[in-house]
Length: 127
Image (cartoon, rainbow, N blue to C red; front, side):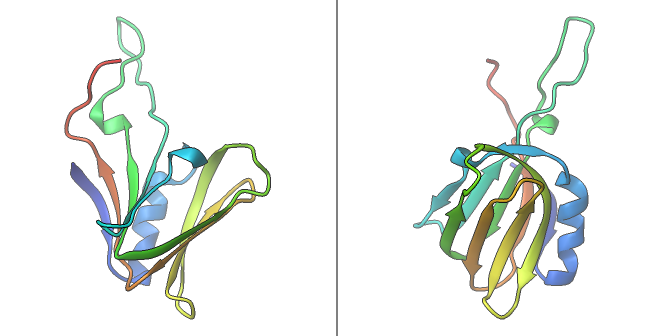
């Protein structure tokens, strides 16, 4: 995977927000890998127009990855399943990364320190 943005301090989170603001994701696609200590949120692909129709390329698939994760808490009170990413914030009092969306959902990742990336796959298997 190629790293599109990498934030290692709260001040650097703006680059993450700029890259994936208004992207959509399925809450059920959020994965916490406890052994790797990562949380991944894959965003819906963007179809790019081509002469033969819509084409998905590796650049259109993006994944938000939070590293050094200890705990993932998700509270989906609205139960709409699909959400739009607004911004990622740092809660220094709780050592937690917070994912904010347009539709209320609480996604909180308790971490050792800020280590957040936006990734794109280097290859994509055709559907």
